Image 1 (cartoon, rainbow over the protein chains, first blue to last red):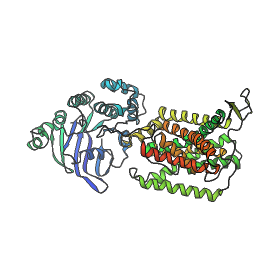
Image 2 (tube, rainbow over the protein chains, first blue to last red):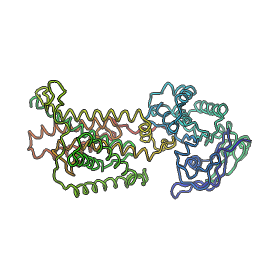
Image 3 (cartoon, one colour):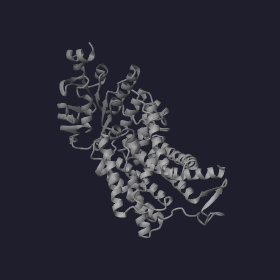
Image 4 (tube, rainbow over the protein chains, first blue to last red):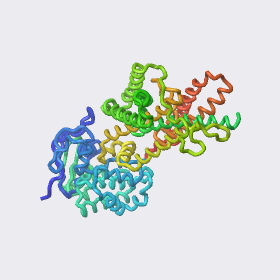
Length: 237
Length: 314
């Protein structure tokens, strides 16, 4: 049995008066890729933002048994969560290398340069563009930079918010191959929010479907892929 | 106009411009990070200059230690303002914070007026004569270039601006806190997700801006013959014009904008209008020119000369 890294129970989240999540329960086990599916506005992004305390939450969120629901975002990142936000969230006015350095902000060890070299090796295009401003990169390059930036904090759990959004199919394929490699080779645990259900389920171990702030369905990736309701709603079958 | 007169106006303009640039940098530092204009920047700077006054004139400190101490005090004050008056408010809603900075402007001005009244008080001369170790010119107040006098005071202000820019550049590009500040300026949400404590980082920006503002006010006072609470009111407008001209989110632009405003004020406004019109119109015209620059930039080129135009890439 693998250990639970993230456990979320009875999670409510809101932006001011607007309540988005209405009692979510889910967990992510070590080494797994877990995917959250759902329509626009179902609360997928909010779920990820709740984990990092980027919105008002109620309920319990534990990371390796430690309650993080009352901690600040910076502390949660320090505890080992990496977050690739929707829309990539690169620092447009900063160079590629500075983007990576800010990713290592929480670290004080001397392995930062080695990590930069490693991600440059994995994303060679970033190495080529190391002194360019992030804002001048293409969408796909920016997405790679966003992932590399999040990895610079050496997270145990990587949250990915629609990494395929707005990217050409070939780029999406490359990106997901890389993510899969990170999962298989480094054992990096991922919680992935995606609209592209086919792609997401093909690399995931487990999945949840959110509908209007509640978990409507859960199961192994395989089970979800063959589920008629999921097929009808998300796989276009 | 002879060339030497022209050159005299150029030197004077670039001296004023360097001071505007100093204050413009303070404005831009905060604007970059929060897209807010801190209207109290000038008044906080004026307080900083009064710290110099207290320490050097009243307490008898040597002038440079007094300036450094005043900059540190101002930095603390700037951080305190950010912590108590700015951070509690929603950063995406600008109106409350702008009103707070306007209120602070009036409050600090009135407070200073109450403490020190509005009479001109003596202020130490910072750059009086070339130091004695300089061969040939040691002890002089100016050197002559092309028949025009280039005062030690002017060179000193330029030198101070240069040191300040160098310091700022090293701080922003070579230190962890500088990197964090640039990250927060670029994308607050992502900075938080990278583990940056955004509140503390913005506090650092306010502290830095306040320290630079204090330095700017300290350079203004000697050229106005002393210090009084309205010291920075017009300067803030000029600095704002410079910052808008350079592009409100560009530090290099703030420097260029400040210098250009100073230069045009001196060469065009002082020389042309004073020879054509009467002397008494000068200060009115200078202020009017600054407003015209702000208005013109906002209407015709909102991103200024060097600012980033907002481009969204999906």
